[in-house]
Length: 210
Image (cartoon, rainbow, N blue to C red; front, side):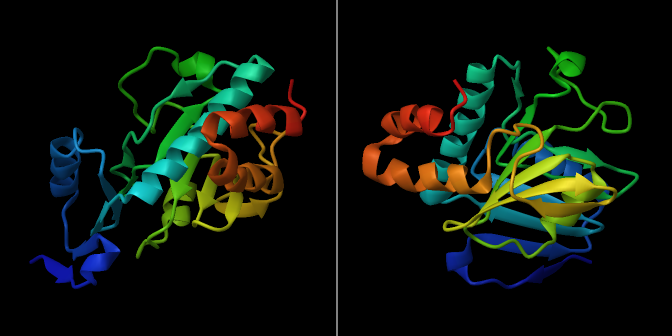
């Protein structure tokens, strides 16, 4: 039996209990062409979230920061957007807002089908948490061994790095060590005053990554 948790419509999310793994996988496949819907699965509990414009603006700009930094530093990157990452043996699955292979880019270059029991997980995931999730998404990332998560709640930016089996707060990115929470957040705020392209140019100069 499926139980639905009632949540205020303004929160743009639904929580379903008693969902089988096969049902989750089928929904993930059906919604693959609908990027506004995000699925999170944690041992029989399925959360469906709908993205808001603020969500999309922030995820794209943070993604541009990652892409700009890797380009300036001469690093290759494999961008996989909101690809679903899951493991049946753990009964967990998640869709980041953006995700990247950087350290392990050469290992997966050109790959389209992934199996986290065999392949390395993404090096970096971006999470926009304007509408707080009902599930502990960080623990899901940790269980899937995704190495680093940037989480932005609309005001504050947090960098979590996987250490052993948990995500720990850090001031600096591990995969892009020239970046700190302070300088990333500063340019997120500047974007509203200067525009995206001008802010990114200022970001490159301000972070001294040239």
